[in-house]
Image (cartoon, rainbow, N blue to C red):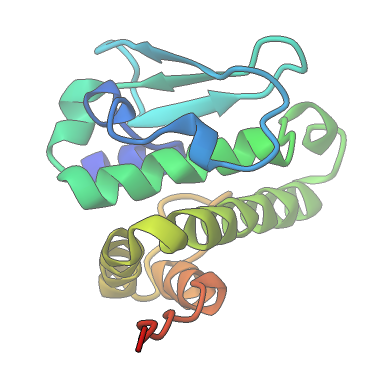
Amino acid sequence: MKLIGLALTGLFSLAYAGSVDPAEYPDPEAAVTIIATDTLRDVAVAVYDRQHPMIYVNPIRMQRFGQQLGDFFLAHEFGHIHFHHTRANALNADRQRRDALMQSRELEADCYAAATLGRSDRQAVLEAARFFGQLGPYRFDREHPAGSQRAARILACLPAEQAPSSNP
């Protein structure tokens, strides 16, 4: 369980970075640099900087999750960058407000991942919803919502399935 807790503080691996085209994600502020490091205690962490946004990933930790879940986790990190999430303004709040702000940011990044990745790989999003749903009320820390909250948000943000077009 500790590994899973570490996994969800940030999210994903360079092993999957090649399979997710950053151009798929709308409105990148700048090119996102993805740095693999097996010394990262988390699975992946996004660092927003206006000029040099980065995602650090631990490929060893993320390899265990598989391609689909990994793609979702990476899309989640792109969400943090897209929304310019930083810890700096959260640190001035009291603990309760800081935790609530951080939880809302996690849900926002989950929604971004579901909405963007759901257009090209619906199954990856469903896999993430299943993963978090299995966690139920469990929370990895005060800054992350319960698994069931995350699963519900992911499903709510998943784009509707497109009906197959019929050409006469």
